[in-house]
Amino acid sequence: MPAVPSLILGSGSPRRRELIAQLGVIPAGIQSPDIDEDPRRGELPRPYCARLAREKAEAIDAGPDDIVLSADTTVALGRRILGKPEDEKQAAEFLLALSGRRHRVITAVAVRRGARIWERDVVTQVQMKNLSNEELNAYLASGDWRGKAGGYGIQGAASAFIPWINGSFTAVVGLPMAETANLLIAAGYPLYKDLS
Ligand SMILES: Cc1cn([C@H]2C[C@H](O)[C@@H](COP(=O)(O)OP(=O)(O)OP(=O)(O)O)O2)c(=O)[nH]c1=O
Image (cartoon, rainbow, N blue to C red; front, side, top):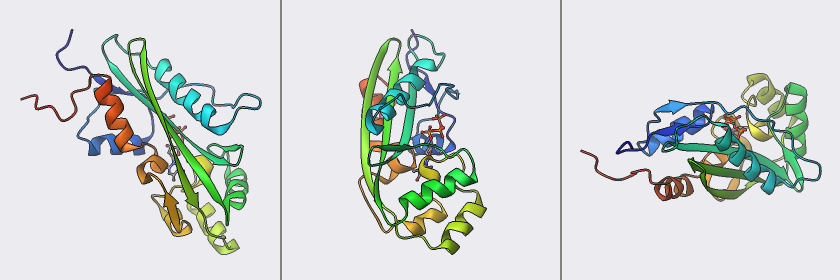
């Protein structure tokens, strides 16, 4: 058994890689999980998001002692799930639905070691201001909506659309850092341990 378990980042998201690097964690491997992200009929946003994080962690090919970290970020408008827009038209539809409204961003994290899974989900409230046509069109043209739940990235130009959030900024970007660190420690990852 290796003295230090390897961490496999089970996520293709560049944001998640950058966020765990801030903890000093450099993954031994990175794999993009390939799962069906369609919500089940009647599935609510929070259980949907938790299920996806878990399924992503389970879909990663890892050794029995490796630690796998996966996550899912979902934008919820009431009971409605807004995932990653398929095209610009859908991004426009999502942004118009969010314009002037408060919504939730849910990020679920799943850490797996062998058959054991440690999970947490975090809900952040986000207020989006009323978007003018000019703002909407400029943002759509920037392409920054691509690959982002709800069709916006709070860490980019869309920061100007968000007067306030209540909760974890990093969770909105893709990983709640405090909870992620706790899950890694629970799974036996030697975070903060001096390995020299
Ligand atoms: C709301 C919001 C989402 N996002 C991103 C985080 C996630 O990468 C993405 C939601 O898609 P996810 O399905 O959570 O993740 P992903 O497809 O990018 O990567 P993987 O499944 O391989 O882990 O939206 C932002 O970067 N900023 C934001 O403000």
